[in-house]
Image 1 (cartoon, helix red, strand yellow):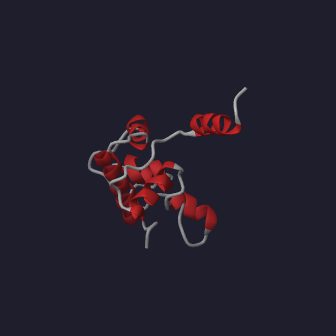
Image 2: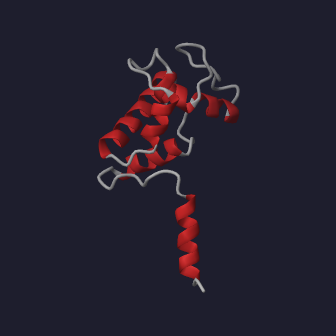
Length: 118
């Protein structure tokens, strides 16, 4: 008969969707990566839901809905080499230090370019 810690470990392991932030990342970057992975990093679409009079829902660069994916990876006017949704999903699921750094940088650039990070 399994004991409680084994049951708890099993359920914890089945809920994990993304790898942990790389240990070499600064604490601030670890927090940013987790918020990107959980779609809570600042982006205009989310901010518009919270503050509809202060933030537009559309990307100021191309007039598409400014989701996190769009501003961090998909907008061709923000990023010289936009990522497909599949590539973005792979970037979010990567445990590689360099890939995690690039993901954080892309999200920060997109948020700054659209005005989501003031």
